[in-house]
Length: 196
Image (cartoon, rainbow, N blue to C red; front, side):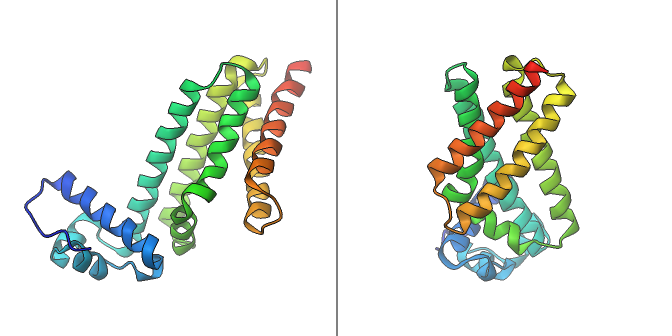
């Protein structure tokens, strides 16, 4: 995929490089993505790629953040469009969680390529905290729990979601069942808290 080295603004060049990097990952996997392979595919010099990302982990982290930004934007839009009832809000949150695995297989591949990278581990914690906060905010109008208790239940639901995702990835569940199970767990958590 040669796009040429036409003079672009720095943000436009970064977007072009990330588009090209994602194309490489989709076509050949994360092992094929290096700063050199990206420079060649994008039709730019190596210093341009190094200037934007510094290292291969820096490039992979930039891709991971980009996927997260797109995922978050889609989730926020889905929440805005969802009927304002607890089951629908919980279903949208559940569907969004599993969409990472089904709609963005690059997410898992990039994460796996960065296992053991301390910066990536910090970013994953930051993004998980952000998703937890978004989830708690979306569920807040439907819960009588304190903010702290609701957030803790969201942490528990996300732990369950990760376990369900393992079953999904092993072929022992289908997406619709995974979404239904997580939706019920979310609702059970906020409803049990409301009765206490």
